[in-house]
Length: 172
Image (cartoon, rainbow, N blue to C red; front, side, top):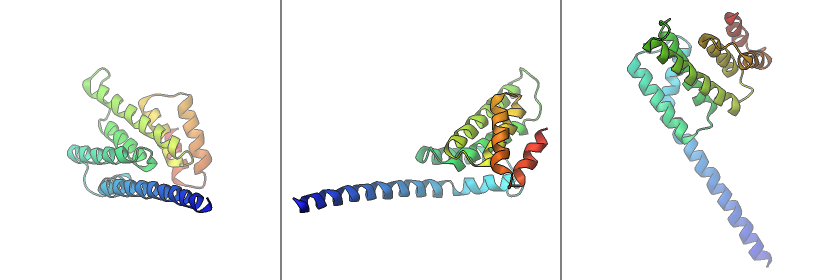
């Protein structure tokens, strides 16, 4: 009876090990598949790297979406998507209200906000995402309770990170 119990325990452990390995492989594949896209986003955040183009933006967002299909709870990919949407919206300048460009800009800002929200749920103590959420809401004109919560949370978790207070201060 004891041997049967040990065998069952061994099979259970083997099953959990297999699940763990599978999840690791899925995460590794998402990492490899999005490597170039994540590098581009990091370069654009630092105002370096290849010149932005709509074709490159589409390819980068497509790569990140594919990574999110494999790992939907990847906070970095969600944050990077938010950055891409917000950057594209800002790049449209100040279009006339009720124009097609204005509607596109509002949609891009909405997508950015949704991406940042999702990232904060996965990684709630990362101050940059909270700061980006607050900035994007401000740019979209959504001055509401969520903006102030994002502002406060960014300041609470990002006090020691010089970039966060500076980026938040630019808002006001």
